[in-house]
Image 1 (cartoon, rainbow, N blue to C red):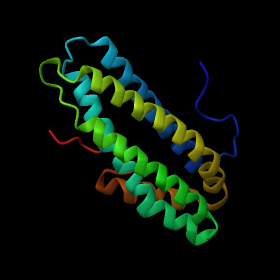
Image 2: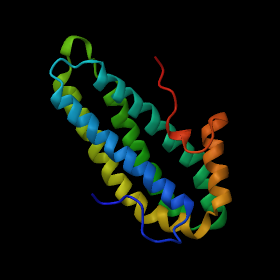
Image 3: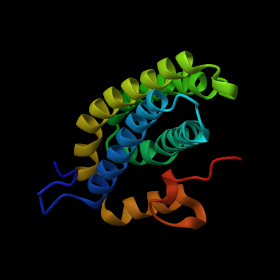
Image 4: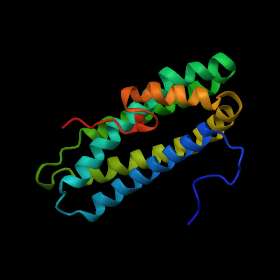
Length: 172
């Protein structure tokens, strides 16, 4: 199995934690697609995973744009150009998340629509993360100290602490 962590001992905490989070997002979206195809009765599991993904991906993008992007722009104003691209991808993902969240799941209805919507979110997210990582990881490594990353992660989490910021509670 390929490691998601780099063998580079000098890799920054921001890059390591962002990479870990991105891999969790990739896995969760792939799992959601798989669960839709494996669960003919559409039990609560796909609905719960869907709701979790919709809420957490939105939260993650909101926190990046409101807290991390300004920090990156303050240290490198030219970053604004590529951050606009990433924000546009977030907008496209938000639209796909809206469609995914709106699929009815009562009594097995919406199965075809759910399969299509989950695949769209997965495909958009995976492509976005590949693009984001090519731009964001070098910027994180060069511009975001471990202390600044800890501050961002803590602010994103609220009272829960570091790295819980992507595991927000899903409304029941």
